[in-house]
Amino acid sequence: MSDYVLSCCSTADLSREHFEERDIHYICFHYRLDGREYADDLGQSISFADFYARMAQGADTSTSQVNITEYVDYFSGFAAQGKDVVHVTLSSGISGTVNSARNAALVVQERYPGRKIYVVDSLGASSGYGLLMDAAADRRDEGLSAEELAAWVEENRLKLHHWFFSTDLSSYVRGGRISKTAAVFGGLLEICPLLNMDDLGRLIPRYKIRTKKKVIRAIVDKMAECAENGTDYAGKCYISQSACYEDARQVADLVEARFPKLNGKVEINHIGTTIGAHTGPGTVALFFWGAERKD
Image 1 (cartoon, rainbow, N blue to C red):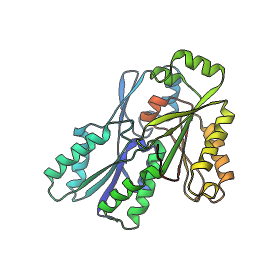
Image 2 (tube, helix red, strand yellow):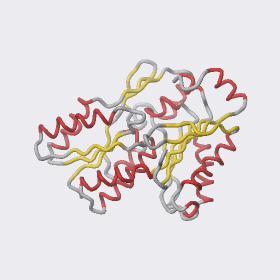
Image 3 (cartoon, helix red, strand yellow):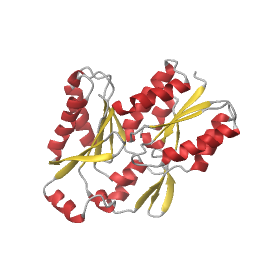
Image 4 (cartoon, rainbow, N blue to C red):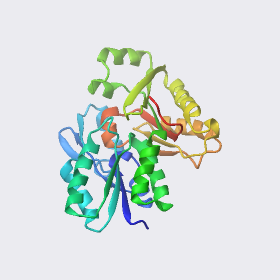
């Protein structure tokens, strides 16, 4: 058992059971659904199925990050137990939560002299961020100190690749990321945008691919191109999905067939309510290790 706590945000999109099994603590973001606020508590308050069904019916959604006061209370609980903390946050490219966490860490370290709170920006999201946390838990279990682990996460975070596609553009329209006209034409032409995360942790549209069948093949082709050792990739692979399990399963089946040295089966998770409030239903994300992202 380590003498420090490994921690992240709920936006790492692993299951509660996975977090508990790996002894990874988490703090919850918040979201609003038709004016009512909920904790992004891994589908406990509202099931993922209900959340995405209500989005598909036009429910209004918004999100809010963990604030400084929440972080101070969260970190103080561990510091009071004599524990240091390595906390890895959702990407600064899509959220300002890292600044809240860092400011809170300063407050807690002043209140509890001798305690250390290491805050690291994951530059990742969803189960890609989760895959990074899983690897961090491995290093913790191998005996890395809190300071060493924080440095390891910072040195390796850009080796985690994130590729996404979406088959439903309605949430992109509501969020102002594409126009209604573009969505209409995209729908008529069956356009499925393929996106990835750049080296600043921002989600960047890369390709407009026509038809779901082709984008499913394309995302697996990107893994073959970018994964460590290509199709000889021997690491773990995670997928997250928003109310489109069958699409995610097709991607997973192709990955497992094309990468015979994969470390175990592909793990399929839900895109949580914070990320999902922006992507909406119909998004599949694929995560794996490769060369450092440089873009």
